[in-house]
Image (tube, rainbow, N blue to C red):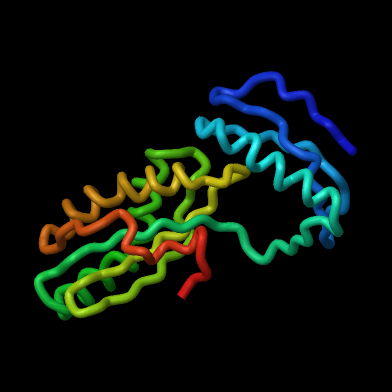
Length: 172
């Protein structure tokens, strides 16, 4: 079992494990760093990790790496929603310029959308480097909202998560 010495992190960090990983790239028991301000997660994640070492382990296959955050916008009517959405989708470079101001790691790689009546459900999908990226993509989405509202004054903000994210549930 490999153990890496953790020397420093800008947020509280502890090693948890051992975690038994089995997959086509890696098969071993590891102690892994868990950096979080939610310190009650350390013992909880540690218990789950130790259980994995007593079993056949956690079988993993990487299919894709991305983190999503959704925003919900409202237009006057469905036609206005569709027109705004078509324009937004054509401006991925502009959107990425806003995202780049929030993180050197976050990059907008895809968008999925659904128009329901006059509502625009927009799922923004990002790469986040080596980070899990939950806070990173929320921050990026939070910075995109005022930009979108400035560029599309006919739209109104409804929610930073219209339950269209997919980080803890299968995508629609």
